[in-house]
Length: 257
Ligand code: DGL
Image (cartoon, rainbow, N blue to C red; front, side, top):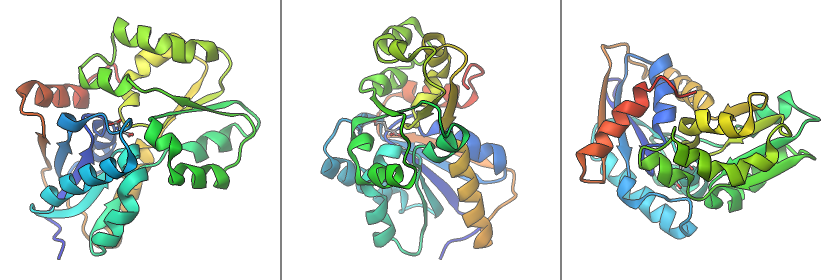
């Protein structure tokens, strides 16, 4: 039985889910958060679907040993691969996933050109196919970006290395995209670099805020919202204190967004 004093567990393949955690903390500062990043196995997005499911289930099993009242899968890739199985397996648990913020982008730009950048696994998934069918758009361009996650994991989100990585991927779209959907939770940390390459006019969308709002709605619905002093624990599968330092930096970093 979930308790109001339980943790909100936030899971990602690595540090990317901190872009969702920020939004959660903003609208629910009184909660107890337990953030787990599986950086030892990141990136997930270039792995086969079966492997992504196994890694996700393994991490969730461990989180469920703790006092958890909700699970936020703050990873588009893990959501696409494993969310249906998680919901079947734990029907009592509040399980929230994240998906690319395509709907707000195509609603704001019904006749504009929209890019969707995500990991290879998210782009090939059935979940995205369903989302694209729900929001058909004639000028949509899918942009895979394998390698971006590794740079964020290495603490290089806002560096010349990131600019050099993004240039061949995004420079061809400079001045041509009305909207770019950031379909991976690592990508918001690269926003300053994305802006440098793409220019100032493209409107950027990511799913973090919507996911936080949905989490709050589900907690309220079950009378599980807590208004305490709030707390936050970072845990990671990588046995390296530097990764926990990076988590803290990313949570507070001023340049993000
Ligand atoms: N942060 C993840 C996402 O939202 C996955 C990145 C990865 O491990 O490839 O898709």
